[in-house]
Image (cartoon, rainbow, N blue to C red; front, side, top):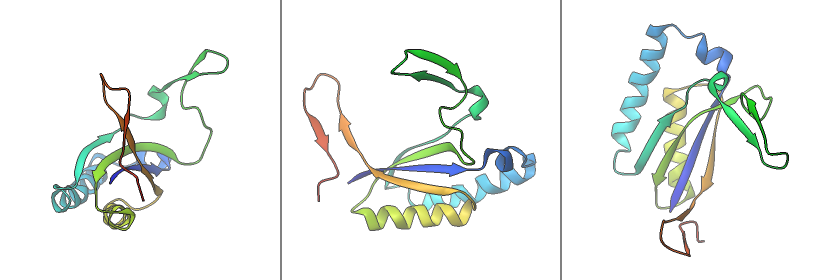
Length: 125
């Protein structure tokens, strides 16, 4: 099953980390990355929300910054191929140990591939 693990945290906190603190978190995350190397397909760390642009679909309006005004912002994500939701939770728990604070949202993924008219349902029960 393909899952997206979305990493949320308080950007004011993470942006205030010194280079040394950030490097320490990344070093702890690297241990988790190595442990789960066979399960994750992609990981990405997003730039700060102040660099974001949002297209509001209904109004066809483009604004600077994130769409939602929230305490925690989406900082990055992992695309993981796991056996089931429990294994995705285990991965997220390991990530939480390495990078405390915030939350990980887990969502099953349906993938669509160029040149096809059908989706791949990776989240079938």
